[in-house]
Amino acid sequence: MKIEVDGFSFDFTDAIDVFIFDEKNKNEAHYHGLSQAMKAVDIIVELDDDYLFIEIKDFHAPDDYNFSNVIDDEQHQERCSRFNHLRQILKYKYRDTWLYRWAENQTDKPIRYLCLLTLDNAQISALNNELRRLIPVGNAGPRWERQIAGSVVNIERWNRNFPNWPVIRLNGSN
Image (cartoon, rainbow, N blue to C red; front, side, top):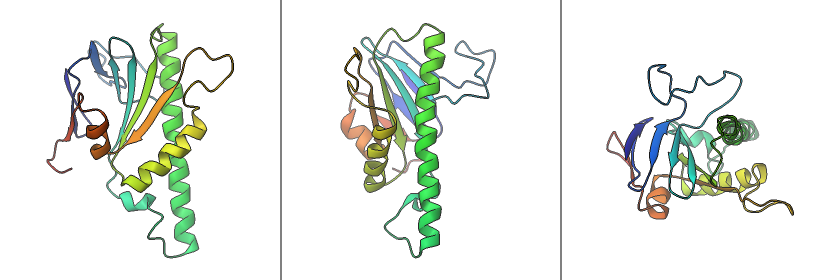
């Protein structure tokens, strides 16, 4: 199943269903009427054994999140603020989408949260570490019977880690 969203084309060959979760058109089959008070991921993919919650962020100024070329304390603080805001947004998109799906009685399979961001590998690694602090990955509690799986990737890492679900940027650049 192919889907285009936010300037990317995905091919989920083994999917049962794929849809834009925050669909705005009321006439679409997967329109959810999402609350303005809550966040939502961009895509939900249903597979045989689990669901994928996918958030996509295409940054037009990725250096705004790059700490390696900071020139002064003020710029460092600005980038810290942007980075912290981004990690909070990613956290709430997962949590709020899970609440939506729970309310729809659609949490009957394990859920994997994948974030496709157009940042470099160092930034992706830093965000992975931070997101794991905010959303406990794995079987984090002694009474947990389900694991949370999450990963932040860029296009290169996506295609390497998920070869059965290739993604391309529609404007032709990777």
